[in-house]
Structures are given as C-alpha cells and as structure tokens.
Image 1: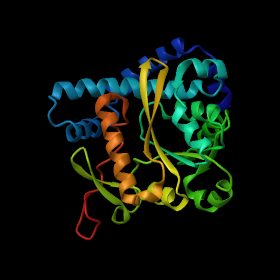
Image 2: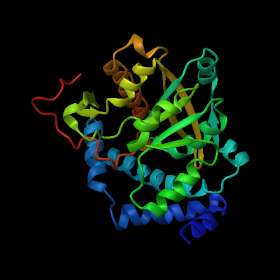
Image 3: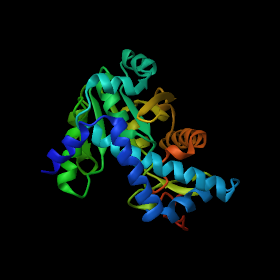
Image 4: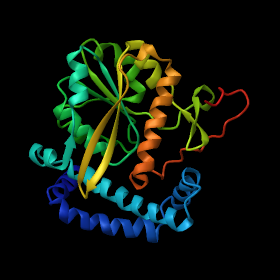
Length: 288
C-alpha cells in the first residue's frame, strides 16, 4: 500500500511535487523547527566569521534543499531515463580514463544534495559494475521501497553491515564503488581525527584502508544544484594509485576537498547531521 501511494505521487511532474516541498519546508522549519539548534550550532562551528543573519540565511536555504531532496527521492521511484539525463550534467571523462587504464575506482562523496540522484546518474552511465554502500533505513517497508528505487538503473547496493562478507566476490572484476565518507564512526577511539572546519572531528578509516588494500584510484565527486531538480556532478582525482599514500593521507585529501566544496555552496550540505557530536579525548589518535 505504501509503495502504491508513493509510486502514484512520483508520477506527478516535479514542478507540482515542489509545491509539496514548499509546504514541507514551512512545516519542518517554521512550525516544527526540525533539528534547528543542531543546524545553527554546526553552521556556527563551520562559519564563525559569518553573522547570525548570514547563517540563518544559509539554514533557510538548507531546509529548502532538504525538502526538495525528499521530494526528488520520491520522484526517483518512477523517473524515466530521458528525464534523469535531462536533470543531471555528469562529466565522466576522468572516470572513463581511469577505467581505460584498468583501474578500479573508489568514489568518495559527502552528504551534499542530492546524493540519491547522483547514485542513479552514475549507475546508468558508468561502463563498469557500480557498487553503492548504504546504511539500511530502520523502517523496513520504506527501506525496501527506496532500495528498489536506488537500484533501478543498475546500482549494486550493499548494506554496510554485510559489505565485508560480500566484498571479495564483488571486487573480482573491474568495478566502481561509491560511498559517503563523512558519517560519524561507530567507535571514535578508532577513527582518524582531522580538523574539519577548524574543529577536530572523527572520520571513518574504512575508505582509506580499503582503497590502499586494492590500490584503487580515489575520486571525489561533488554535487552542485544548478536549479530546482537539476544538478551538476564534478569529479576530482584524489589519488590514481592509493598505495602512493597512507590511508590517513587519503582521508585528509578527501576532507580538504569536501570542505572546499561545502564552502562554495554551504546550503547544499546536510547540516542537520551531528557531525561534531564526538569530542576528542586523551588516548585517541592524534589530530591531523
């Protein structure tokens, strides 16, 4: 029943669906104030030189982008390949060059909007198996619906808790793997601690270590919102051969590029995430 309702909604044109997004914005920002304190605290950490008024302006646009992303994610349940191509500009020159050299590629992204849209775009256009690592949604019904939606154009989706068991089988042939590397680690003591917008923050160690294990190329992909429902995706090479670097260096390259992209478009990042929830303590790895 839930799928049928969402599928029916997804058949509406995006210009109509964005009316729902505008209503949702009023509800979550003005009426509920969803995570507003977290958003404003995060923006104060990231942009201490901006005025309160400037940070509020970023926050308001962030909430608009958040509700747009939710609506766009529903639209992806039924979006056709022609409309998908029309709504995303994806330069694959770097990806194709690396694949032609026989390289496996790990794509690292941040929680910029719309990462769900990017998954469909790259899965459809990359000329290699496209593996996406995802964190399962707690609601199993909604989880199954969006898993089906995310894999419509060929993504091989693997849950974080089962990736280790499936990794060897998935990586026997040339592949492209994508994951968001800016989430909080489960065990802060074991994380890489880096200065993120000037404040120590823990970063998961897996992406750097896995890249080195396979000596993959590492590519950062940034997302830019060029209009409502329209995006541009840009690739930046972080490392052609991961073993030329340490896993910490790969993570630092990722952190630096992500921070640069966020500064250029601050409202297009997921500020409702408690990125600085953990504090560095004695006994943790040194802050880099």
